[in-house]
Length: 328
Image (cartoon, rainbow, N blue to C red; front, top):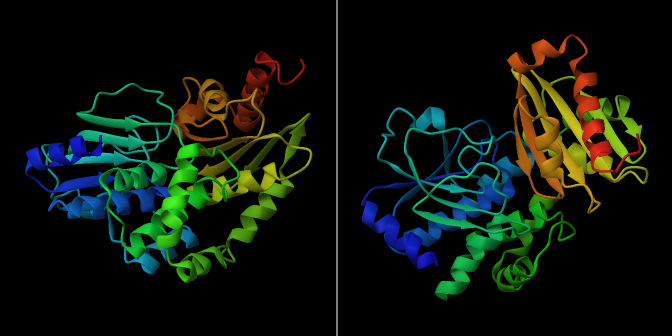
């Protein structure tokens, strides 16, 4: 399968751009890096790129630890042209969390469900715990051992996206772990897993705790200031650890709108469908059964009135009642 992607890149005869979602996390970074280094073995040059920010301590340290170079759209936008080939990794075009770059999206490698159908010249979209699993599978398929930094980055992304193999794990993820484990640098992974929180993050934890509301087993909270995407997701995991909560929605207020992170640990509530339906006609949203995210632009909030947070909360409650998770 991966040979088709390699052949496609060679036919294009141009530098390839590997684009992650706007605020790349360790899985997106590790996956993109792994694919970049794999293509290098076939004399295909690739640049890693994203829009947004890398603004969490663990992700910025990951770039430094493994010598990964990623360019923001602000840096490369002026030199990118419409025919430049793009591979979407850990994301899908029109997925709500990826900017539409000037170039041509020729391929997609992703582990999320598809909410907006798109056509690519090469597509590998499979539901796994991490996108790093799919990239690792390419190395396994070709019989190529990744370099130590590549194996370590892939393994770190795999561990982080599955929450240390406790969330959304498939047999393919376990096979990837088995392949990567003897090849990775244990000391580097240990360094990345230590001291992952910055002092400024404590304020967000405090706000999330202060504003939490629990309806039966559904937790809803608002952080009334901007947080990095990765921190909003971490806060959702934090709230989900409460014994009284099985499903959680965390909102971060931003100047341009609201950022959402959703978690579910029960089969009857699919996080991706919940946020998609709750935010219908308001914003972009989607994700896995156990974890999802979304964004509502400020312009969509104005018709909801001054208490738009309550309106959105009630939309989530209505959807949970509709599927029978909460009683009316």
